[in-house]
Image (cartoon, rainbow, N blue to C red):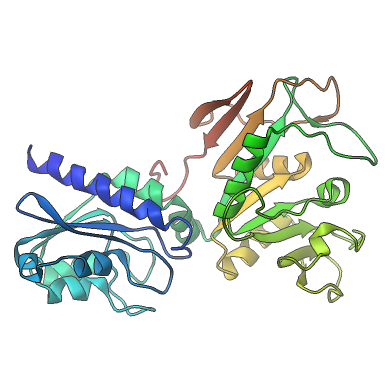
Length: 358
């Protein structure tokens, strides 16, 4: 095995370790680290939770014989930090432990790091290799990278549609048509747990009365967001039950009377999507799930303001109703998965982080 193959082998392990931090690392990136000496792994670690030790620290702490560090290589999926945040700089620790070689998956886009960690290591005489499995490492933290590169959250659009292309019946009352199966409903709740905020329009809030919480999966509820321009939604909706924080985007200048509900005023004479993006960026919300309705979803698609689209296509036919959103032609990425007689289609938009395919 040559050096390139060996570096890729251990970087894959870094990525595997990093994914263990999926539910706890945010708003920090997921990072994995592996320490190798004489062709054997002697230490491993990942970033478990924001505010706690970084991957490099946990990997170094796991080494039983610290004397081996001076002739080891540390692999890390993201550039070691060089600044004091909630924890000391990892680059300084690597230098202190006299680890002679560092292999980095990708550069950190965060302005306070962004190449500085690598330069600090090289200035100290450390042999640094950068860009091993770079696309995979970028994809791992595409939410973090998009947030810092695009100054907005990573946006996932989600809907279910019938075999004949409708997402619901046209109705003024009653219950919504349930298109999802128990299995895909569980998957939808998993996606909610992975996003920090979830957005619906006024009509969806009124007709479906959704809770927008995580019930069929483990994890925290996302921040609930709803657009209600004139504040006409009735107070008995689940969105106002106080179970989890809710933000109402409105043009009205008034304070909410519901506990846990905040009113945020927007200028509805202008495009509201950039205003919502600015608000979420200021609140450090790195990921947004948009669940409907059709008009809201289509507005994100038309604005090219999306990163992933999850479409559940079921075998049921509705004959008529509310048409599903229309995807643009020649979408860059698509994966299809089957759940019984239904199919899930995953699309990914390629436009972030220096044209890397995240």
